[in-house]
Amino acid sequence: MSASEPVPTHHDPSLSGEINKLTGLNVAACYQCGKCSAGCPMAAEMPRKPHQLLRLVQLNQRQAVLSDSSLWLCLTCETCTSRCPNQVDPARLIDGLRELAFQQDPTLAPLKQRAFHQAFLHQIKSHGRVFELGLVVDYKLKSGALLDDALQAPGMLWRGKLALMPNNIEGKAEVRRIFEACEHVAGEEIPS
Amino acid sequence: MTLGYFPGCSLHSGAKEYDLSLRAVLQALGVELTEVRDWSCCGASSAHATNHTLAVALSARNLALAEEQGLAKVMAPCAACFNRLATARHVMAHDEGLATTIRPMLTRPFNNQVEVQNVVALFKGLTEVIAAKMTPLSHLNVACYYGCLLVRPPEVVAFDDPEMPTSMEAVVAATGATPVSWSKRLECCGAGLSLSRTASVVRMGREILADAKAHGAQAVVVACPMCHSNLDLRQAAMQRRGEPLDLPILFLSQLVGMALKLDPEALGLGRHFVSPAALQLAPALIAPQPRASLQG
Image (cartoon, rainbow over all chains, first blue to last red):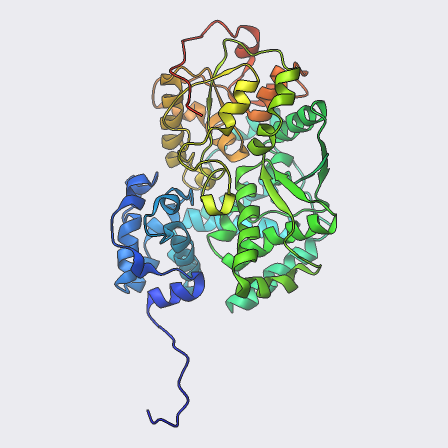
């Protein structure tokens, strides 16, 4: 590059660079103490624990991380984030990784979790609020888990816990425009 | 005083009794609630797990509505809504880039002036009024369950101590009931995986309730509709795989309402899967001594 050429803005194409751009986090600050995984209520069920996911981000293993189902087991309970001794914020990192995976290809997320998130967002986009019965039906259709929890429905109805009609807000169109504006920022449609 | 109220989606359906009991109790305590007009869903887990901008924008819309209404403070009884609203307030104050992107989406002036409060903080501020009006719930040992989102992450929620909170115990003490000392009060109940990974939620719930029971609790007090549904509705499934739990799960507002001798129907006490009836009729029947009370 000659001296006369404009200096390009620094762009780090690595996964940690992408994460930094999306979340402002510095994954290099993680020194693998493992405290995040030690306190994680879902670590026992995760193929890769939070500190292992972090290490893979540091090592730029994009596909391995984004296709790991462990991402979708995080409950964002924030225990890791509250305890991290170097303020790495693993919960925010996992949200960022899920966002990148969802942008790249929503089918990277396991079917049931993907179906849930899509059905949930669809409720907000359609009504402005979540209509629980509509959420459950849509989730079942999207996930194929038709019989899960079917026995709970009568008990919930009996206790007045299941509204039968959606509650549409006046600003429904406003909420829909927020979705559209965020899709514009992301450069693609939010799958719902 | 008038307080902004953001009920959130659950309080309009599955957790109707939380809404009912809050309104009844706050009226009895002289707190006037003004619902945020035309509020929309906070976005919950599904928004923040898939699109950060959307998650912040959806919650910020509600803060902007509250501001437009002239509300100085908004109380969100759902711990997840509280957390999302507090996150939006925090992000809009600290991430100028994202705030600039989001402000035009809100279609109304937004100066980020509305304070966000959870239900425990509200009741903590009312302990003296509660203590003055209550009939003590003597011989009732309860486990105060915070779960995740009331106290974490500390810089965002700015509430109590993230590892050793004491606020809910202070409210319970004001009702004359005894808070037991136990280990799992800050563990997550499984929250948003309730539908899509029920077995995990049942495992976590069982660990939480078994610990509460082992430490002498006769009931568990919660301040979140997600925690309630995961511990109450899913309790039958937990028991199918282990020893009986039979622990009624009460909203904090219901416990305060019981101490204020409000009508059980107005508190929605009959709407739970695990009935709290035994607690009201014969509170002294099953009263093991609680362990040492918490250090303030």
